[in-house]
Image (cartoon, rainbow, N blue to C red; front, side, top):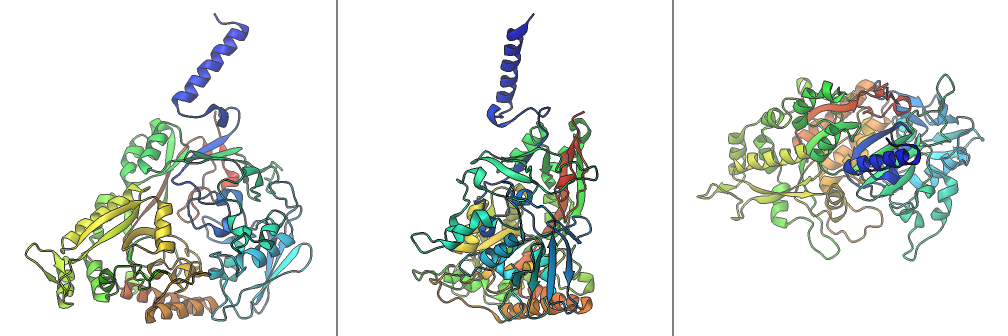
Length: 590
């Protein structure tokens, strides 16, 4: 028998062996009995820890930051967070927020009204910084922004020069950032004359310098491996019994690019939560009881799945067109786009790829939006009809050679690349089916499968892509949240990305009349307070989009998540996701 020190040595060796076998580093993980934690998956490394300049949807910001308000994940209504209440003026031209008492940053420094004023005036609305949030804060057609000013030590006022319906939503959820940690970077420049803020809090920054105000703070980051977040000891929220929240001590985000690998890790017990793909649903459902987890169904996903062409007709600084002029002529031909719309078999996509666990999407707005226009209400649709697609192409001057390959009126074979991110198998399967569908009308395509960070660079920076299969979320409650995507000069106007601030080397950029009409509609929608009229405005926007087809909307799958039964107080929804009530989640290891 083992006794005393020998017994302890045996246990230590045994425990170390178990950790090695499961692939977990001893120095980064404690046993769950020592510290409550959730082990989650994230498909990409973060591109930055600086929220204001981030463009990557895969990040930790939802865990480490809060704004003045938050959206209830079930009702969609705004609720107080850092602000304990707010007052809207009778003329709808100003909002006064009152902060909670004794707020602190994750380093223990006080969080005050001065931080709120600094965050907006010096960061989000700073013309020298490439923040995307100016798009949603722009007031109508005046190109002005809210006036943000300190009222007193507890209150801050946001004022606008004309009625702006989305004001509360626009400012409420944007994270407040720490003045004491970032102010110096706003005042100083690097050797190229850019504000040092633009390079602050990169992925190589020591985690102790990343200051946050949410339920967690950054503990460590190991590139390509994991991110560890620890409970913020200065977080403001407590439950009714005065217990500090959140209840879970630590979050471990494993960086696992492949959804197949995420599935393997979840089934082996290494992950506590996973998004359930259509391919994995049947398998996980069979193992649900044995695996001691529950699959939660939040209904249809809140975003939209889409395919779109690069309509950009501009050239870069070297005079090289972003898109091959031959292809650009096809893509900018509305008849060509309509033929593509009729050639995509979305019923087959839903049945085969989504296993029937989805709905065909027709609109640029989520079906969860109160402004969603359905086909039953008159929204135009494109049902699968390859014969009609061919007729449209032939009438437009395209023709077929002896090999049944589609050629344009100059004899050029119609072929292009389909860009898709590598992390999502169902997304790749969707692109593969589109490739097959297009081959039935004589179009040759090849897949360009890249890491999502590289996809974003192509879409928004280099602009050198042909066709993209992807998704977009936002605007489920307030359509103006989609302004960065639909405004012709928006920071996410990916199908025709125009020059952004400080980009002076883009030549020949063109904006179509229908894009300008959408610009006007979004401005009208932001100024309109009558709900009936707002619905009409955004209905007209949806009709323009489905008529002009900058995007082809595909299938939205169900929002499904699998989570260990040890996790308590789950209140999952498609709009709020799994972690919208993170403060209330508990781990029960009994």
